[in-house]
Structure formats: C-alpha cells, structure tokens
Image (cartoon, rainbow, N blue to C red):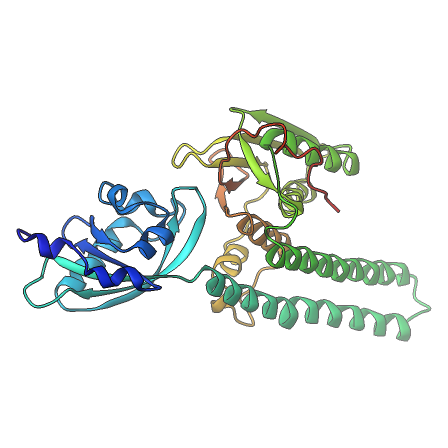
Length: 359
C-alpha cells in the first residue's frame, strides 16, 4: 500500500466503544487502530505494528496464526468473516474477543477493516451456564437415581446378607452428591467473586501451603515440589480450590499404595507466564471428560464426563486471569498445568501474609 491514507483510520473512530483496526491481509500486521483496540489487546498501536498475531494469541488456544491469516485474506477478497479468538494481553491476562473482518473498500484488496469486541464476560457466562445445566441435568440426576434404586433394593431385600454392600453404595453415592454440591459452590464463589480477597504471594509458598494441607489428609501420598524460579502471583481462595482438586485427583485416582505427585513451578517456556504443573503416573484423563470440559455445547445423553473437579480447576484458574491445560506425559501419566499471569515482586505492604484457604 503506497498511500498514507490507507494506513490510517479516521479520527472519529476514537469515539467508538468497539475496537477498530486496519490489518495487512498479507502479513497480518496491524496498520492502525483506535484507542479501544489498544485497551482490548493491552498494547499501544505502535507496539502492535511490531507484533505477529501469534504474539497476542493464547498459546494453548487450538486455532493457529495461519487460520487468522486465512480469514484476513478471505476478507480482503470480499468474503467477510466473523469468529471468536482467544487473546493474551501484554499483562498476561487472557480474554475472549469477537472479530468482524471486512474488506476496507473498493481497491483495498490488501487492507482489512477489523472490528473487535471484548466478549469475555458473555462468553464465560454462556459456557458456565451450559456446564451448570449439564451438571444438574445429568450428574446430579443420575446420582439421585442410583441412590433411589439401591434404596428400593434395601427395602425389598433387607433380610439378605449383602445388605451391608447396598448400604455402602448408598453412602458412597450420597457422598458423591455432597461433593458435587461443594464443587458447584466453589465454582460459583470463584466466578462471582473473582477479584475478592486477592493477595500477592510467592507461587511456591502458596503451593507448599496447599500441598501441606493435602498431605495431612493423605499421609501416604508423596508430594514433591520443585521451584525452578521464584515468581509471584495474585491469588485468593479460588487458587486453593483449583490446586487442591488437581493434587487430590492425582492421589485419589492412583493405584499405588504411596501415590506420587510432582509439582513443578516456574515460567512457561512459551509465554513467560507462571506455570504450576502437577504430574502423576495414573491412567490418562479420558477424551470424554476433556471434551465435556472444553466443548460444553456438544454434550449429549451419551457424551459426558464425570470429573467435576476438572470444572473447578478450569473456572477457578480462569477467574484469576489464567487457564488450565491437560497433557499426557510421554512416560505415562498426566500433566495438569495451571497458567497464571506473573506479577512484580511486591513490597512489604503488598505481601499477603495469609495464604488462600482450602476446604
């Protein structure tokens, strides 16, 4: 593009409440943008001009930079695009944005007009609602049906010798319902009070505190902690809930007499965010459970997961501006990574003396 006019947005765009940018359809570079675009992405326009799309895309987001470029080219050719994208801001926080791409105008085949809206609150609320309905429709209903079924057996065959087994099943299922209700409570607290009670703490110190509480409940477990680099994070009770579920899941699902859980703390090699990785040697988490976690709108009567603790991990970490990733270890077992925005080392007046509670 040779004309300066084609690089600039009209001054009136500064008054808009949506982000507007001009993108080069060939390179994906930002050519210009209004103040709202800067506020959404967390970068000044001058800095955005130097960045590739991948630099402000969440590294765990499944869609690639090449897909973004493909959509830009299609828009430049007159095929308008509308889609959702996962953005990693300069401060490390992750947000959801909705993008509308159109050709800038006749003769502007290399320039794309992009409208951007921050839809984080709507997107997360929508997905949480879907998952809450899933829990209420399927998990709680099925657990209640099982309890009623065994209760009927107990009534009809109370004289049988295996009545103790039936009673144990009733007790176990009742505990499951109680645990589900507690998990929902933790999620609700995290998503409705995400900024309440936050304190800045050393990531390792917070992890050690939570791990100590878990170790007291599971004395046979071997929980090791490795701090690769001292890093700071802002946490509240939600962090304690997420980490507790991650570590307890590793212990509970182990078939070893002394379950081994390794926790590694340090910067993510890809983004520099704080990564708290929990590793175990258990059977891998099923695709069914992960699909239910990340694709809630695709659930059916036969497609569902039962790992409610995974929901707690995901939503609690997201309430702190981070995300959760699950991988199968090459040597066997699972690796659950909690990614959180790194924070500057606090002065004495900012340090939180009391770590997040766990229940």
